[in-house]
Length: 481
Image 1 (tube, rainbow, N blue to C red):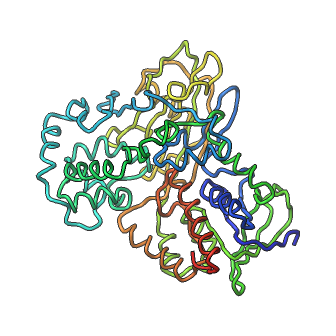
Image 2 (cartoon, one colour):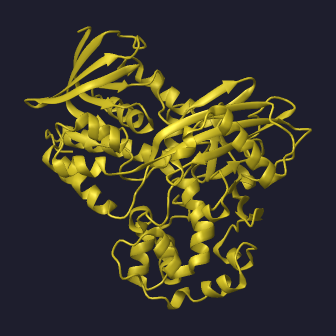
Image 3 (cartoon, rainbow, N blue to C red):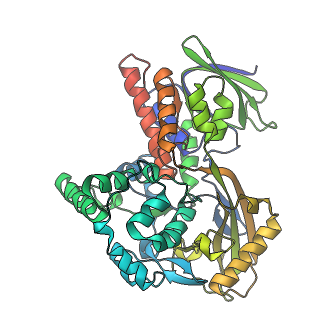
């Protein structure tokens, strides 16, 4: 063994969940170690510079859904890197009959939407008279079809599900992804009454529609934004603050209990670890932040059978991201954020982002860049294609959907296997199994994307809340968190 250490907490995984948790614990004075298999922090947040292009290989933007996230970025010295997207972020398209149709920016806009038939628009007016769903855990597709009609389900909803979760709304649990909406319809009878009650409640507690309190200042109401230099600026900064506490290029081999401590055995991967060889860490608290499948494999010997089964049974969607660069003299991308593609269109991609329109400065002079998303839960086989085949596929999609006749002058492919856990029907039962596990083992914290949301802000909030619970328990002299 080249390393043997004792810590208050050990975090496995240096995605934004693990980094946020470790940073908050360190701020509170606890001794922390973070173990990451890759040679960099950030997880799915990865920014690459190549041939003058600045490429986001994972998420491209953040949404300031809570005021704390923006405050955190200011606290760690990134406030001056924040770049709001502005009006272009609200301009999005959906494909209908092979053509681009603008998505409305408000619910009332759907009555003028060109991608809905007259019958579908009339069907929208019936929503206030539709009784709440009788099933306790309907699929997202069934929930939307019941309230707004099948055309909304098969068009904008399907496109939205593909763009956010790379998933299938026929299998996604409505309660798991939109619990407030499902419960609101149940309690108030329809979406309209729920929305009115929600607005009234927010006015009463002094919050805005974005969740920010009136008077919090403009930095608290950013909406969608990015960071100068790319989103990886954030995890890289957290990695710098963690310093020697962050160990990259290490693979965890074994987890076990030894009295009141967790023992984590790890080794360097292909010599990438700065520690080299093998090491062991003992800690009071163990925080696991990997995907459901990886966590089930790693922690199988210490998990309850129901918690292990809950993680192992959860499907995850895989994605290929194809970056293309074009000469600006050859093409004219829309001045919009992007386009979503419903399954019914039979296209080969889930959607396109018009990166140079939404995020200026991401391509060298005289060029523009786009990002194409391929695969998802419905078409994982498309990731088996070669890089050349995926580039050709993306090029064909640009020609068919945008009328691009020019060939790209730059291309780069990034694959993410099992990147997005699917919160499918029955998800509440799986979450309950994980919660029972943490009650039985209060120093074991399962903080991967298996619950609590899959967006980057969700991950950050999950990490910080975990740290808060540990610090609270520590200050009280207990182990329960």
